[in-house]
Amino acid sequence: MPHESRGPDPFRFLQLTALTWEGTMPGMATSIEARTALRAAGTTTALRLSPGHGVPSARHLALLSEAELPEAPAVWTDTTALTLAALLAARARRDALADGASVVTRYFDDVRLTRPASLSSSVRSQLYASVGEYYNALGSPQMGARFGAEALLFADSDATRYRALTVQALGHALNGEYISAETARAEASELFEARRWDDAETAYLVVLADALIASARLDVGRLLEAAGTMRRVQPEDPYWGYSARAIEVMAMMFRRDLGAGRAEARRLLHGSRRLSSHRVMRYFLVSVLSDILVAQGESREALSVLEPYETPEGHGICFSMQRTAALLRLGRERELLLETEGCVASETDHCLRTLTPLLVRRAVALQRLGFTRRARQSMEAALHLIVRTGSSATPFLMLPFEETRALMDAVAAEDPELADIMPYLRAALAQVATPDTQARQPVTATVRLTRTELATADLLLGSLSLVEIARKRGVSLNTVKSQVRSIYQKLGVTGRAEAVERLAAVDA
Image (cartoon, rainbow, N blue to C red; front, side, top):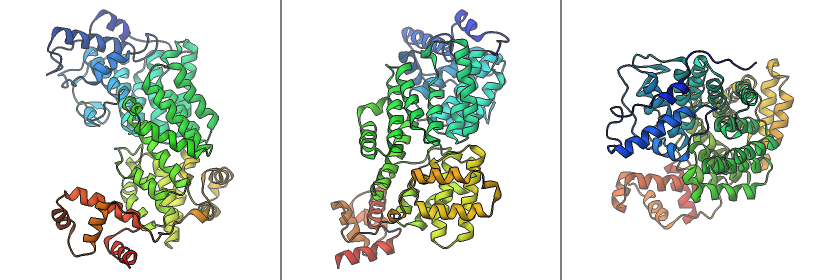
């Protein structure tokens, strides 16, 4: 049955009362025309965040994404809360994320407002949904899902309920909780169809959640359907179009159309389209490109692609995890363990979707190094996460097939709870793993260093510290550190002593 509306309608309130922007936006919009335009953008956008009133215009979202955020009011009212809801949604939808989570902590302690509030249920739901949408855009899915749940708790109309469900669906999907994500996505879709809202009002979040669920199940057909939905629903929106192309690249990887996927990923990451895209989609593309390079036997190139990127808070995209496939292929197991030590230490705050493959890859590395008990513990934790959150094949992407299967079977033999899921896991592994003969890549005798790397490498052979090398070369310490990391990567070593030995061998 459709969810019946209860309580006051904030949308009627907005139609009768313009949002009060003066006095809450210090330093912004000093001219009357600018204030008027900003007020109109905020009023209309807040009205259109949920379906039934049209979609926010690109022009309004652009204006709001550049606006200064207000100070927390003495008491939150419907007007001030809807103002913030519009601003946060605009920042999420136009990739204005430079301030990170500090935007939210300005107003919230966990999920509680830090100032007194006198809010209707509908407005509170809208505010929580916007915060959840912003967290999802940042790549912090656990907080995104949590604010989505709060938004659902206060939703008192079909429109606010739909929006809360879409925020929750994406948060769960980004966090790898596919059972919960599918439930929220299905409920949102059923509600949308029952109310017969305009197709253009379909939430971007629910389509992206659908794509992530399809990716976890290696469902290429469903992936392509999600991409098609994005093109159909918002054919003129470049952000939706970019996401559609990124989803199609994922499908190319699963179809093993690696050459086309690699070329398209590079076009999207380096072409002009990236200027109108969401950060989380660019990060997904970087991850897919690195997986494709590993599959093509170019693990060092994969590490080079990943080198500039830092993992966002929440680990919705975890570049430390992403590096592990290449490190395994290169036989750099100790480096893999060091790279991921911080992720394991912060396990409770780590995105489950990226933690699960990280645990599997650490298990393979530990097994290679002879730490059998720890290897089995890590694999067992990963397999139980897969069972609990919903079957997914992606934790096994680009892993060595025989090694991984043998370790999985050893764990399952001692854990009867895993018996039912093992046939699925073995089939998934067979689909996305690589032959063991490609698991390690020997370092070749020829090492191609750039001219500047050669200059730094020559000084590494001596006793100078990195600070002294930077001073001698007349560059910053960070530049030298970056060059040294590149040298280590190309040499296939993890430290200076190994690098010196390798360089001496090459010179000889």
